[in-house]
Length: 309
Ligand SMILES: [Zn+2]
Figure: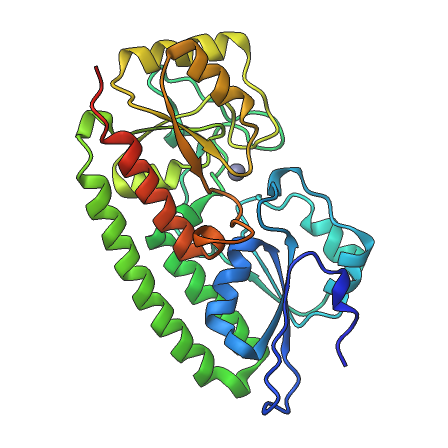
């Protein structure tokens, strides 16, 4: 029997009546990993995501109920690169001893030095995101996300070798889908006039996206959503925005919109819409990882191809 799953924040239950075997119980740290795991695991896995869709992974602390859920899991999947600062304590509190998958294992990480703005000033401070530390948001490059999928596949196979073929087949299909997605985003971003390929968002999540798809990244807050920019940092950013041909600003689903509204007021630039960075949407197009990336690319393309006066 399943443990009381109604208490979990986000849960996908497999109800395959023909399948006599117990499902593999997987806990993921946040919603994007939950979707990737669902794509690879299919109906064979029962997934609980600790951080819910539309919620901020930077401002999360696990509940005792979640510690109990983890204690009964077979696989734990998390991002790594110090995204989940609360994880070590949670593992200790739950006595978890199952398979652990660090989804970002094997990717080439960007560091704080790689995401400086045009003034050479690093905004990554506070909440454990110091200069020189790895940027954790690697899933926003679909190329690197393919490595996530490989790691998730291997973790499921390690925990449940009887279903290895199923996981391999699902992963192969999903990796093909992501390959197409990566090429589509590349094409879409390349169609934006080069000098207008600038992302301004509320926190520095889009470093990998900018790296992969040749955009410049400007952001007032640090890598984490927890640190607010100083007045001097805001003033510098407004200067940079005015010096560059920035056509539009963007909100994020899991970051404070106040900073972007303030920037819009000061610069007179439009806010083109909401990008998804660290969490899926609860419903709609952006409720899967691939859908979220397509949404982001379409919104960036639309917002940035606008002619700047
Ligand atoms: Zn973030």
